Length: 130
Image 1 (cartoon, rainbow, N blue to C red):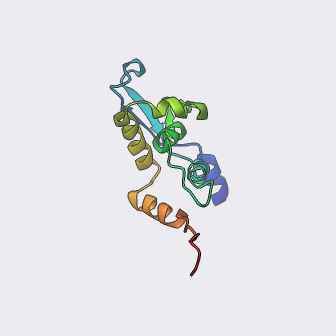
Image 2 (cartoon, rainbow, N blue to C red; image 1 turned 180 degrees about the horizontal axis):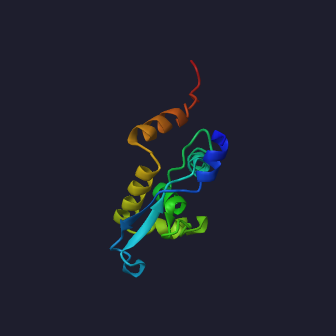
Image 3 (cartoon, one colour; image 1 turned 90 degrees about the horizontal axis):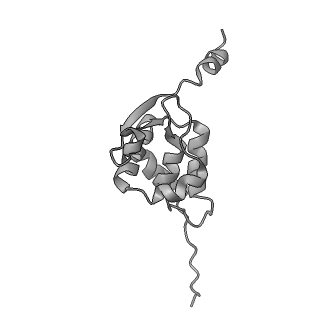
């Protein structure tokens, strides 16, 4: 079998992990997270730098949680319109989901630093020259 076919036949196998969420007892005390697809990660990063002169870090973690929180079968638990109310939830629970999703998706602190460095806009000096 060709490598391409082997990869395509196995592509839907995502890693799913339960994360403790005692803040949400109605969710049976845990929420599942799954690995991000490359497309989802790229979209998340693109949303941060829509404006090349300014990064949008508002609700950064809630936006990420929407992309990785799922049920035990891997179906996404939230929709993009859930970002606002998720952003108002406990930082502790959102941070746990964020950390678990990043770990499963292979996103390291070094990746974040490189992304911030590579996406930083260099503001032009608007001051008049003398």
